Image (cartoon, rainbow over the protein chains, first blue to last red):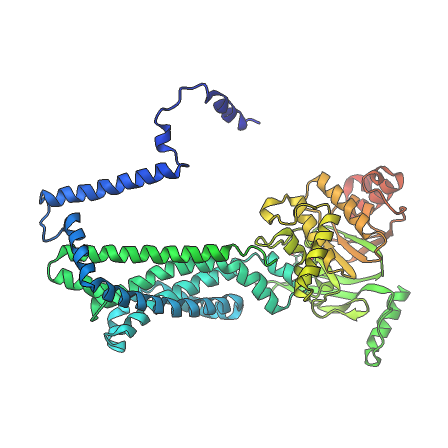
Length: 280
Length: 281
Ligand SMILES: Nc1ncnc2c1ncn2[C@@H]1O[C@H](COP(=O)(O)OP(=O)(O)O)[C@@H](O)[C@H]1O
Ligand SMILES: [Mg+2]
């Protein structure tokens, strides 16, 4: 009773108190308000950036103005360079992600399901996962050449372990009550795996996939920055070598857009699958 | 005891494919069970426990916690093997999970991503029953446990009592010959517990199914069962085996005020080693 008292008092008082007139402006439940604030914030940042650039508070060699970036993007699109380079980067990202995710989920399920494998492999997985694998990028270039393969392999090496670890965690996080229930209800090992373990691990698998797709892009861009003929990473390097900050920021903007789209795609797939509440 | 020995003799003769007495639904035969903990220590959980349960009997096992009650049920469900001795269900030695046994725990084990209906249908689904048949059966059972209208509800939308009802319907859906219940109402509040006890007894009466109920609630044991077996503290041994000759059908709620009920409950209380009543009796 006691802890409830103050809130009751507060609630009865609230209507009588004068309404905070600007409450509607900070209403966290109104999507409209939230979007207004987001746009305002973006305008502030970009506007501030434009002012800083226009007044040349920073050497234009280091910072391009938003207007300059827009100009660059306009030419970049017109010349068609955007499509060639985006296509290369996107292709490598998707290949690396697809192989890494497929094998990562598979390995994660097997290792999570088998106590033996889990116990044997855990220290190795911890080492592999905590190593900054991006640092291996130069080696991958040496091993697999400056073509797409080295980027795909680098992306794969990032995605594989991220997805493996989250899948395994998902399998292990399943309430033992549920597998026990399935067992005493007469489910075979296979049925228990498909109907309980796999199903229960899905949220964790998707968390890994969402992270994995971004890391795939990261791996590819880093690989391209080290050595490549095409790709957005290579473009970033080229523009920065030639002291063209507008180009660097423009390509970064394209990369950000791609990352957002990939993330959104994963969220949609998850939501689509998320509707599979019960099988019946 | 004589029946016990007979059944034993038949078992040793299993080359001739002769089975123990067929009217025995459950037979726990000279079971001793020892657990080995991680640091290599041996824990003797059960010592020389024998129980014969004829088909259709409702038996309750009571005893202090840690005396091996759950271990007995786990053996009968085929989840663990006794260190010594053997257990039989329906005349067959148990050596793995069996689809003739329904096992219900204190925790509901509902799959949170399935509706109540799909949870109840789970056992039928793994048995390959067609979708329309199993859903129809799930609906009928949900109605019988008082959950009509909650077919599409998920675990998160149900109270503890309702979840336990789903678990009960799920166990009944597979139509087991033997029900193993491990403190199935233990996690419920007193009132819900009585309601569910009453419902279970009503659903069980006249089905001819064998029930083995583990509980730490003496009045639950006496009110529901035909027979109460008291186990001693670890290592569990059979301390007493008491016939509950209260009439059926029983009204679980009002039978608690019956004089005979009180006498039986007091006796069991004393056997378990309760002090207050032990001094009085
Ligand atoms: N897996 C296990 N490993 C080691 N000891 C166990 C294990 N399971 C149960 N025990 C021990 O065996 C004894 C009996 O357990 P249990 O059958 O669960 O008792 P109850 O259900 O009567 O409380 C307890 O003392 C418990 O600590
Ligand atoms: Mg127990």
